[in-house]
Length: 164
Image 1: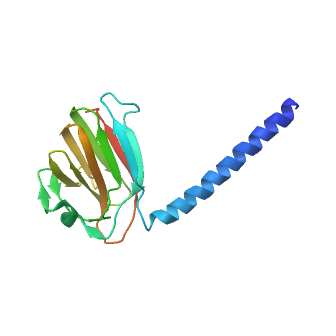
Image 2: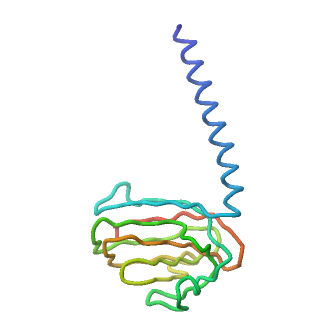
Image 3: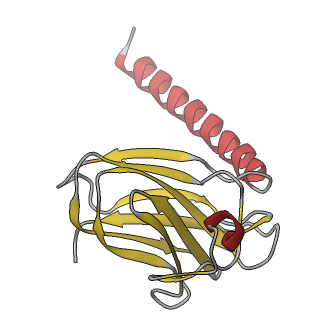
């Protein structure tokens, strides 16, 4: 096979992969309106890349304070609406003296986390973006990202970092 034919074949293959991925992302984006993206991550200290970034769609039909079992936590109010199941599960293999989870979204969102030691909620940690910062015990954490209106879904990124 000539080098030109090989390069043409590689370009064609890359174009098809790009087209398939783009088509799949549109299908996923439409499906996300009905159901958030679920993503699980396991990290240990000095993880890489830092920040670790997860993506999803905020919101749901359940009240955050009902899922949390309270309306207020030490880190803030349990406001907004989420799905019954968490958007992400975060497994920490060891204790972290400092870890920050922060949502970035074009819309006003909330966060709720359940894990070892309790439940934490937040709204407006940095502008309209929620976040939770502090010492974290080893174990599994369930993470929900909420929207203020029931049934409204908005794209977000969840940044996880050890950097202060």
